[in-house]
Image (cartoon, rainbow, N blue to C red):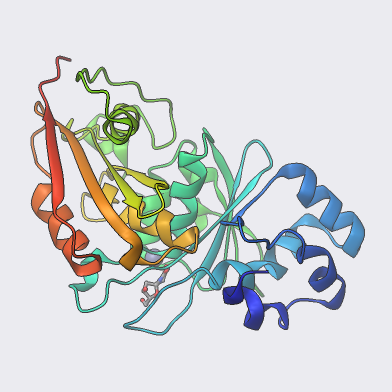
Length: 297
Ligand code: THU
Ligand code: ZN
C-alpha cells in the first residue's frame, strides 16, 4: 500500500479496510472500475452509495493542500459505472486562483479516462459555488446527483437553481461531450504528439483556444491536462492545473518534473502561456516549451 493511505485506512469500516487494501497498490491513482465496485459492495455487504461515501477518506488522501491543510476528496461516477477520485491541490506560495478543487480533479480524471458523462459526484464537503458552476458545464449537468455525508442526495439543480450556463452564451456543447478539433503539427516527439492529441480533445467553446499540457517526470512517465472552459469563465480549468493534479494523483512529486509542454491553437482568442508558466514555476524549476499550432477550423 502507498504510504499516503496509511492514515485514512483507519477511518474506513473494518470490512472495507480488508478489501480495499489490494486496490491501494503502488499503481493506484484513484480509479476503481465498475466490477471492483460491485465486488466491494458484495464483500462489505453495503450499498454502492454507502461504499462511495465510505471511500471519501481515500480520495481525500490524494489532496495536496499546503496553504489550507484542508483535505477535500471527491468521487465522480461515470456512466460506465467506473469511479474516479480527485482531491484539492494548492500551489505553495502562489495566488489562490491557481488551486484545483476536489470536484474539478475528479471530473477531469473521468474525462481524461474517456468518460462521456458523469452521473454522480460524491464529496466530503459541500461543493462551493465555483464547483457548482463547473459541474453545471457537464453533459446533463443539472441532473448530476450530488451526494454528501449526512445529506439527502440531490441533483445539481437543487444546489444551483436559476443556473447560468453554456446556453446563455448560445453554446450547445457541454463538457465531456466528444470534442475533435483538427490540429496538425508535424513532429516525431512522443510528448508533443501526446499533447496534440489532448489539445484536439480539449473543450474551449468560448475562445476556441484548444490547449493541453504534458508533463514528463525523470523516469519518462507523462501526465497530461486538457483545457476545460466554463460559461462563467473564471471556473475554467487550466491544462497546467489539470496536468499537475494528474501527476499528484499518481503519487509523483513536483521535483520529479523534467519537461513541460503546452500546445495551443493559434486561432483561439486567448493564450494560456502566461498563466501556465506561473503555475509551472510555482511547482518545478523547468522552462515551459510552448508550441502554437497554426490550425485551420
Ligand atoms: N475546496 C474544494 O476542493 N472543493 C470545494 O468545493 C470547497 C473548497 C478546496 C479548495 C481549497 O484547496 C480548500 O478546499 C479551501 O478552500
Ligand atoms: Zn469548489
